[in-house]
Amino acid sequence: MVTKTLYRTVGMFMLCSAALFAQAEEEGEAAAPKAQYVELSPAFVTNFGGTSAKLKYIKADISLRVPSEDAADLIEANKALVRHQIVMRLSAQSDEQMAAPDSQESIRKEALKSVQSAMSEETGAPQVDDLLFTSFVVQR
Image (cartoon, rainbow, N blue to C red; front, side, top):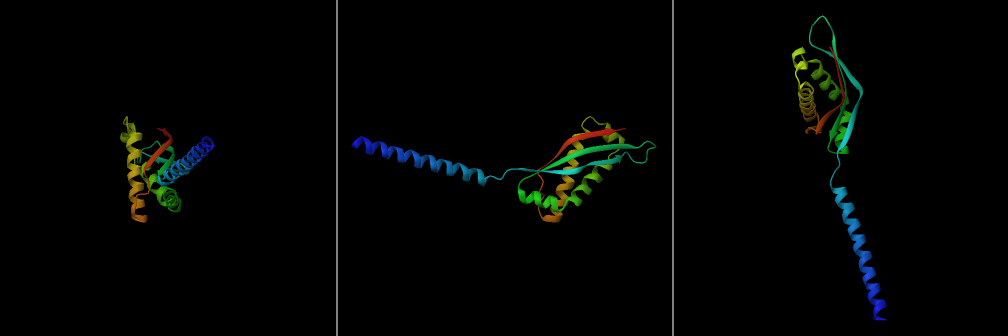
């Protein structure tokens, strides 16, 4: 009789502990917002290099990492502004800048700063954590 009561008590304790642990895990996951990725499509295609006789092009596929779904919604609402900032940054590159070994990374950082600045002016916060090139092709 005591053994059955002990088993029931231990069993109930284990069930309650498992349920509380699962609930705490879910709350912990819900509390930490997950990064969202916003793909800017269609791909960016623009010329660069100024007034040289031969046209040179950049084609880039870009995704933005944003901290929340709300930020992703704000990016979507301001997509024209974001795309404009990136196109202007890509087309402003000189031949010398594009020939540098770290040109892609420097362009990425400059474009990120431009987008963050524009979004700060529009929404009061940068909204963008990172700018990622998923494809980057240069034709000279």
